[in-house]
Structure formats: C-alpha cells, structure tokens
Length: 126
Image (cartoon, rainbow, N blue to C red):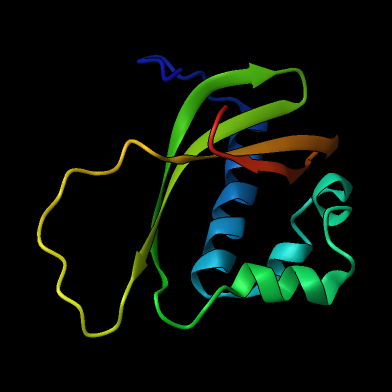
C-alpha cells in the first residue's frame, strides 16, 4: 500500500492541493466548499447539495478536530489516492495518549481537466 518512494509530479501536487482543500473544508465543516471539490460520482449519492452539506458537517460534538494526509503509492492514469486520518474531539474531554488508529480513510481524486482534480471516492480501502 504505502511505499517508501512516492513519486511527485505536477499531477500529484495538484491532486494533493484538492485533497488538502477538501480536508480543510471538513475541518471547518464547510460543506458548500467541499461540494465544489467533489465529482459527480459523489454528488449522485445525495439527493441535493443541501443533503450533502448537512451530512458533511456532521454533529457538533464530537467535532472535526484535525487531519493528516499521507502520500500513497496507489496511482493510476488520472487517479491518485491519499491516505487520510480524520480526528474527532469531544469538547471538554481529555484524551490520553494512544497509538494512531490503523483504520484510516483513503481519498481518491480524479483528474477532470488539465489542472483540475476532484474528490471521487472517500473510502476505508484504497
């Protein structure tokens, strides 16, 4: 899955930029921003934009607290996948140290134009 050698090129950088924007939208619960970063494949899973925005925002507690993105060797023509850990936090709750979970998320992006990448899948398997 992960490789010590991840090859970075223009496509990788542009796809990573979109993945970063998507995760920043998740962090701030900004579904309208995230909606502009997803493909028709994901949009078709919701009845309308408002449905996506409501589900993307989640609940107020626990809230979206942080994320990490790591490169992944999962690449195909016009598709790049990144491994992402998304962390939640309950207000007022202390969390003692623990090993980072193995259950992570993968965000697959698809190239739709020369310099435009969109999130096409969010899954627990690459």
